Image 1 (cartoon, rainbow, N blue to C red):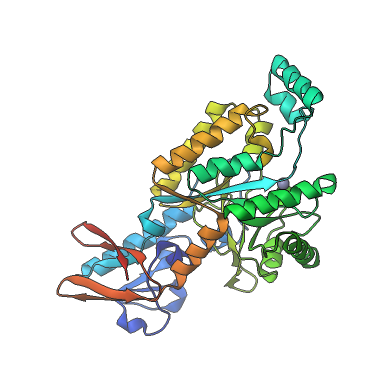
Image 2: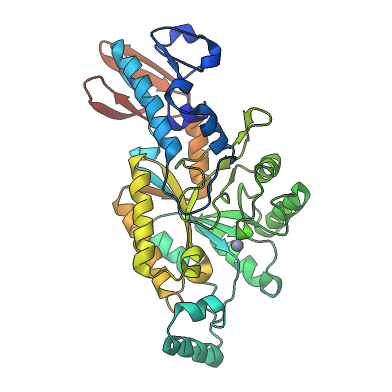
Length: 406
Ligand SMILES: [Zn+2]
């Protein structure tokens, strides 16, 4: 079901005789011309293991094996419909028929930053570093806050992002409250940047959520844990139990996809044979990894280009994480340029650029939208429980029609 949901397939677990096509497993022992046995087409057990975090190889990866498996299932379903003279109608992936989706996020680890940080020294020439230090000592300039500038850049481009805030910035707590007010006022999302062991302890997680709510007035709907701390599958369990809608931590310190899938997904709980309530949003690029590896601007752009190319092949989505600290044109001009380039590139390539919660809410709305569709006089007519759900009608002739179901 998880895979059918990703593909936007309209299905039911009841009245299966009324459907043109039935998807089952070998265990069901169902036979018939219209029966598709999923585990004869794809390695179902391995796929479930990957979705549960049990099958994982460390390293940068643009492998999207689960998307490839889903494509095979989709091809079989489409053929089954076309064989009986029906078009296949399924929900499109993103609002307004966007080609793909990019989730824009910022982890807020620091609210002040001096040029004495190791990563600043490593990212600049000696002359440039001396100038940065001189200005810092002379004027007390802070190179790390950058949040008003980020909001201005994104507002000018009419995009919303997610800022993951911690609950304690020690001497900078007043500055933290100012930043939260600015982000909230801009309409961007405030999420929790969980720390202090909240990724494995629901009591700590709940305390952090309450503390963030007290200071911001909003209950966070999602989390990214600081330093990408994650215990599989405990963190999904804790995050689900805290009633958070999404997590976007499960990515490790590599580029690409830890689970070979470029869609938001419900992780599979293989112990209880169900899906966790929380949605995992795949983060495929984090600035710190590039800085730590001393990658130049061109190298970062190349990685992002390659990620976008594979994601577009599946009309998928991925999250990017640019820390406020590194979006400074003085201290990290190559990363700053990469971020600006990325925003403009995504827009020109037809991406829906949005916050994590906007993506997550859309994905859930799309899952739950009930469509009543019928073919009358060779025309698809119908209605939707949720207004203007985008669908694609795939005809046997190869023609595709895109329309919103009212
Ligand atoms: Zn962090």
